[in-house]
Image (cartoon, rainbow, N blue to C red; front, top):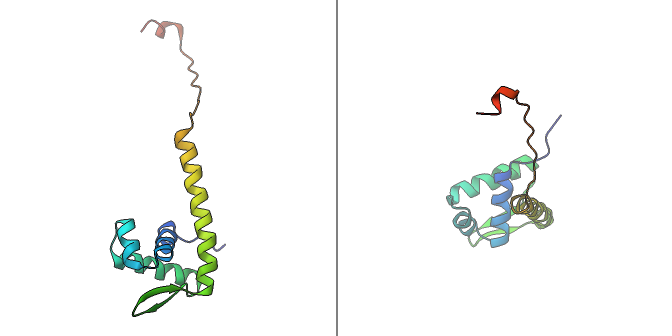
Length: 107
């Protein structure tokens, strides 16, 4: 069965480049090189078999498909971020039960 979920780093690179309308600004935000962002975006485009950006001398701009995809990716990443924040800030209560033989209780 084919996996339709692209690599997370490709999604993050695409989202940043699209939101900032710049590969170089996305690279700065993600603390990686421009080449790394460009490679991740190209991998995502190959994975999806669609062009998400048009590339020109003045940088990149989203295609119509890219604009639609950006909306979905942004929503998904925001939801994942929100869930992660909730898990990290909520008190996690777990109960640990130990069965100990009586002779070990005085240690």
